[in-house]
Image: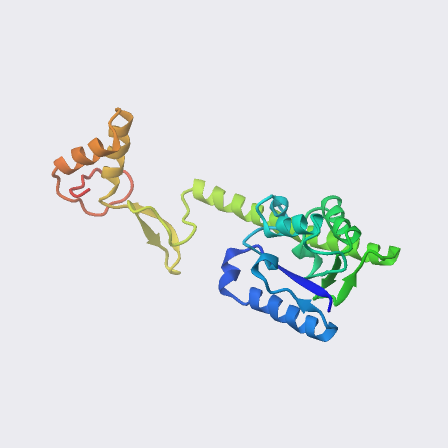
Length: 242
């Protein structure tokens, strides 16, 4: 019976709590049963990269499971004629075709068949020009999708940073020395200082004066002021407990 190895990857760590791993593994097992392949279950030949992006090029780092798979192929531990089962080609790489294609060809030229569950297609080293063309199109599409996503995220972060510079809250998260001000629609519209703001100023002032963390804590605990009431930015107040 021919051997098959499964390589599973997802880029977002939060997917570990979802269905991504189970979905990919279930589909892999079903394919092996259909094709009479023996799925290698030994932990040394199980390959799973969690929370690693295929767009950034980090998958090519030496400490990834994909790199470990390539090393085992290179030293013959995974024999020619074995099948690598992946959900789609973008599990291997979402980099530009210039980087993705050599990896793809390296595996095929080593005699490793690549089966993609999503497209139900198997690539072998006996590929023809049409198979190669189809793989390039899929790699190019995956790269463009990741590029557009990256650009959209960068644009959103730039917008949020501009809002933050203007003093606009970006959500419910805030420093402990500030409270949120809400508009009539129930959404946060600004900040108001609370009675913790003075201790923050003192920490910065004492630190800039050359005092270490332990001494700053002692100095603050030695000061006994009554806590002030919540106030708008700019109003004087003192704090009591640090």
